[in-house]
Length: 344
Image (cartoon, rainbow, N blue to C red):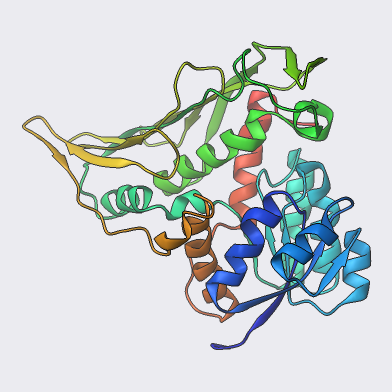
């Protein structure tokens, strides 16, 4: 019902504390009433003025009344958390990657369908102005017959000279690495722009820097620092999707190539992209409206698109039309991740 306020519990205090909590608070229709984390729940609850802090999901579900569970825990924890929330009739927003294998993704999607509550995946980058503009150009057939999609993310964070502390992120058996962290976003964007399910996919992961360094110590990792997929959407449309964290510069490109025009958005990061339309006569830069909730970017660059995604999420909660990313979208992405080797 429009105007209803929804009580939210957030699982995970890292990205959950820096993005999920302030995003729900900023959207205006949610009250963050609890946070759960085995290590930092009390700290984040004090800093963010959250009434309840718990050491585990089970304690949070038993200790307070919720309408929504927002899952920002690591991917190896998603299945347990999603199924526990759905069993209690909660609405669920789950971080990407949806799962660590296709079977778990399918089980969660089936459980969501049976529960009948609103479920969504946190693919907030769909909601940046540049990607929305590309989607609109495709939907209105301004590019001609679609032939190729490119979604490329080049980063410096996993170069051999960059330090990142050891954690689950560097363990394949726990769903770590760039495939789940970054490539899942890029695959979602390609499929969303294509407007239809993938027919088949191929690709691979690679680990260029197996020895990492942080705080004067070294450790070994077996996760991908580069992931590469080619996706066939049928009817002559193919996508190339790349996430590589070992490059010299940070750069993002999202491009849709039709037979009459190309639309391309590019920039140094996933949020701030400049958008062009190119044909055989000219290149035109598009003037786009400002990002909704742009004032929140100073706190965290992901907050504006995340809150815009929550606007769509709350529309679904109110029973209104919504294009929020779904668990079914997550299953489609998980199949492509499995095709290139991300599956445990």
